Amino acid sequence: MNKNIQIMITLQKQWDTVQEARKKIERNNKTITFWEDEFLEFRSEMSNLQNAIINSKKEIKVNELLLAEYDSKIKKLEERRNHLKSEKEILAVGREIDQLKKERGAIEEKLIFLLDSLAESEEKFKSMKMTEQEKEKQIIHDVEKLKRDSSELEIAEKSAKGQFDNLLNDIDFVHQSKFLKLINSKDNKAIGSVHGEICEHCNFKIPPFLAIDAGKDDKVVSCTNCGRFIYKI
Image (cartoon, rainbow, N blue to C red):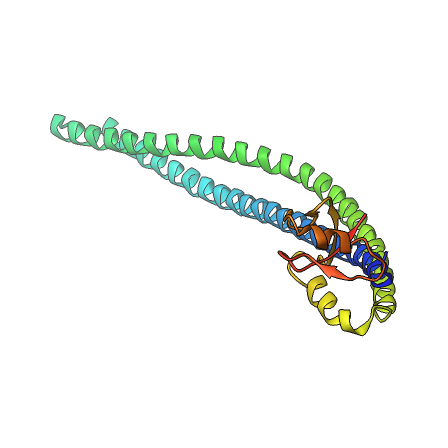
């Protein structure tokens, strides 16, 4: 096998290691961001629920005071009615009492609803508070694990990149520019094997003579379709 091709194969493996490490680090960072954002959203929901509980308690207090006011008004009117002698006045006060009782009933229904909703919200907040501690503990553990993994990947990536840079100059200058252009292309592939007459990279059938040349020690050839360097196994 041609010396330049041998070097390119080694460089490709090193570059694959670099790219794989970078992809894994990027995935780790995205996962960390996702978990941290999810936890912040959970805490924000808790904070909103806590504020809603506070507001519910205030609203309950207002309605309790309002209910007490209606009870006081109704009591005073009933006492007044007991001292009236005119049937017309008694009926008028009775109607006023009935209206107040109707309004009081609506307030009481609203108060019962608020109390039930408050109980549900407090129960949910209590549950979320317990879950928060578990979530935070788990996220801290998982994030630390991912960061350790990323640190190890960064070391592997740096090592492979260093080896790549050191070995790159061993390729004959005439092939270096094209190799670098291909290795930095979208798929990061500069070289691939030929199986029979089929290019591994693009699955294109190359001319028979080119497939033969790909296995010679004195030849450096490229696929006529994708332009990648090729070699015969």
